[in-house]
Image 1: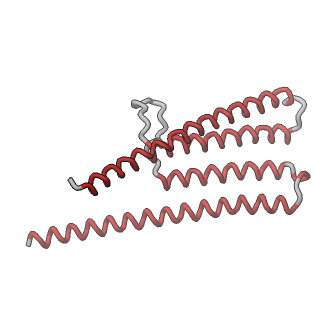
Image 2: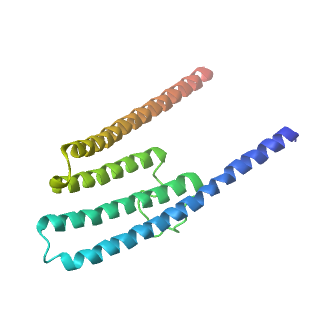
Image 3: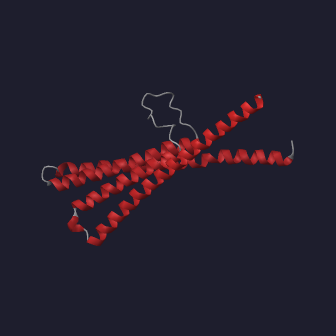
Amino acid sequence: MKTAGKLELALEALLFKSRWILAPFYGFLVVCIFILLIKFVQEFIIFIPQILEADFRTVILKILVLVDLTLVSNLLLIIVFSGYEIFVSKIDTKGHEDRPKWMGRVDFSELKIKLFGSIVAISGIELLKAFMLLKNYTNEQLAWLVGIHLTFVVSGLLFTYMEKVSAATKKLECEAEHVLHHSNEQASKK
């Protein structure tokens, strides 16, 4: 084997193994989920004694904070599971019955769509909290919040549309390649 061939194989092996550099990133994101759990418990403990005295609006706002923390935690978990399986290695759950159905089936495009969906949901909750506390915001601040939320919504919709167009194009290319291959086989038989 030529030296260039050996160098190429060694470089490719190094590049392939370098994916493990990402593993600590996912580990630290799991730590971030624990940090969010601590904040969730803290918010919940603070919230409990206030329930009976709090008005409806305050209760809703406190619940929205808890929902927000939950959505961010879900987002992190989606990133950890999907990112690790896409870029590092398959997670061996040994056929565990609680394995999420989407795990191992989400490709990078679907991951980005899930991320956009989560970001839009989180942004929507922040916007809802702002609307419930209208007196604390100026019209300009509310306009910015609405504009940012709409930007996320439109970006998510456009990205989803582009992904569907790309998938449809790939499908047509595969079908055209199949037809061409079939035609070539028929021609060679004659």
